Each structure stands twice: as C-alpha cells, then as structure tokens.
Image (cartoon, rainbow, N blue to C red):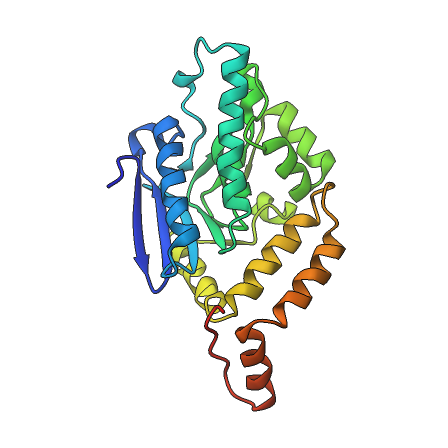
Length: 258
C-alpha cells in the first residue's frame, strides 16, 4: 500500500516505520504524503488505540529532510514546504491517540522535529539528536525551534540550534528530550509495554489529557479553562460512570470509549 513507510497493527498498537534505509529514512514529499494518509487511519480507525513511529534499520530514525528536494526552491516554495511539514507534525502532536517516537538512531533536522512532535520519546542507547540546519544556511522549518525550546529550555535549545551540534541519547535524557534510554533491541518492547497500559485507560480522558497538556504551551489558548471544560465534559461519558463505579466496587474498569 505504501512505498516509503511500513505499517503493522498488533493489539491495537499501530507501528509506523519510515522505510527509506538507503537514504537513512530521510523525509521527502512521498514520506509526508504517506504519513498523512496513515494519520487519517489513526484518527478515524477505532481499532487503533495508540501509535509507535520509528525508522527502518539500526542507523537512523530519520536522518533529516531529503535535501535534494530543497535545491532551487524560491522563497514562496520554501514557505510552502515548511508549512506542509508543520501541518503534518501538528496532526501528530494534536492526535487524540498517544503517538510515541522510538528513536533507533540518528534523529537529525526533520527527524528530530518528527520525534519532538510525538507525545513522548524513547531512545535507543545509540540514538543521536540534533538540528544541524545552520550547516545548510537554514534553520529548522517544521517546528523545531519551538518544540526544542519547550522541551529542553531556551538556553540549551539556542546552543544546539546555532551550533548545529549533536547530542547522544543520555544527554537527551538528562535534558528532558526523551523519557527513557534503552538498549536498541529493547526499544519497541519498552514502548509497547507503556502503550499496553495506556490502552486500558479511558480513551476520551486520554485524548483530553493530550489536548490540555498541549494547551499549556499554546499562548492562544487558556489551558486552565480548557481543563475545566474537559473535566466537566467527562461527566457525560459512559467511561466516567464505569471508572467511578469500578473504583467504588473495587474492580478493574472496562472502558468503551463512549
């Protein structure tokens, strides 16, 4: 079905693998087109409860954008390219279902931006992160300047952005860029174990948590007000009734997503 990505659905967890190993899984127009197509499925397929995004092979998660597609672009075309990339990554960030990046190698440029758009990140001990766009006379265009600053703080973010330096997985962990560092062979299992737990929770409440947390970093939204509204809305759900009943009856809740 796809030519640049692989998909696999198991136990309600969809694994999306960027599959251009000869190009270190670099992002090109085809990858973005297919990623948007699979995101449509993620949003609307009830069989999918959560998602893992990773890269094929052991060298790279995504080593960046496909720079060959940048050559000869006009200002207007550059703006359109950045807008399209940001639109895709906003879809990931705002997805009501958890999306976890399993960073299995180089996450550079657009690859680091892709990882940062996910709800959280798990890295192999071989992973490396960076925004080296300044080496090309550019800056990150797919949201990297904003998300990196939010995740690791302004001082560290600016240093990485203007030096183009790379950091290893353990440094990324100490900066708060990733949640866990595990051996390469344990990467997908770690993510799967976490998502299996999340998949037992109330889907409407999970989605509301994601929306409210995203609002904390959006100056155009009142996160506190959004939280109040979402909290109140949950009282109309079957899941809230089931969750509170199960708690009082000392049994495990079985949520329907309604």
